[in-house]
Length: 179
Image (cartoon, rainbow, N blue to C red; front, side):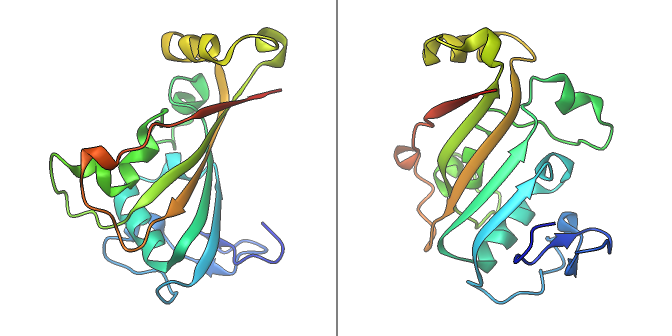
């Protein structure tokens, strides 16, 4: 739980302010007004969400323009992403781009949120990758399993939403955190 924040969880635990099922955002709105929050922080949550698009659309509704959302999660090609039986989705370098309208240039699935990837940080082993060029690390991330220990993605709420236009897609700049 984060002190000074509104803490939300699926069950009422000590420090939880709001109990809500984020998998139900298709049918149940979160109990907040539009444009309410300036920042969201979710640590090892999104990989447990079956219905990520409705959740991201609902977070977009309650986000102020340019609100920041930070997600920490296991990287999709790591054992951690698959071993936990409560993980229902894996996330990769380009996964979070699909929470932005430019990625829906081919088909309209009814998603009306729009988040832009601001930062994407991959945590890797310092002993193995200290001094290695970032493009070489990225080659290994794309080729092998269990290179990334954790992924942190920072998103920005775009309001009003952009057009579903492929030309508006931004290239993700990957940063590496060596630990």
